[in-house]
Length: 111
Image 1 (cartoon, rainbow, N blue to C red):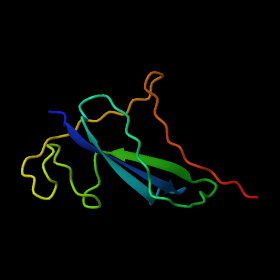
Image 2 (cartoon, rainbow, N blue to C red):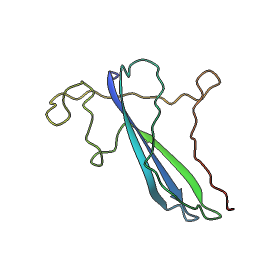
Image 3 (cartoon, rainbow, N blue to C red):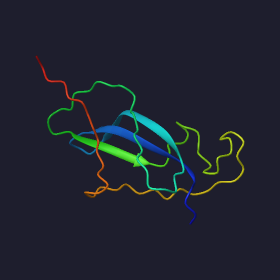
């Protein structure tokens, strides 16, 4: 497998109910160049307001894309609409003390 020099990072926030049914709330995508190097991907999600009910869980999905919601990334730097060559993207999410990961969700408390 060849790591891609150009890659996307897609993040989606979901509400998971007591039965395990997941509902998409918002998402965001960022494209990285030089993606074969260790780098930070700050993905801003679309603004949303949501109240998680008691017993529900928060799900955060991280992937290399979300076709057809967002156009596929060929991983070559070619224009997305006309690219003919595709390269795979091998991405890792680090979460150790030297490479911490975080999901920051602002919380509004009732007045």
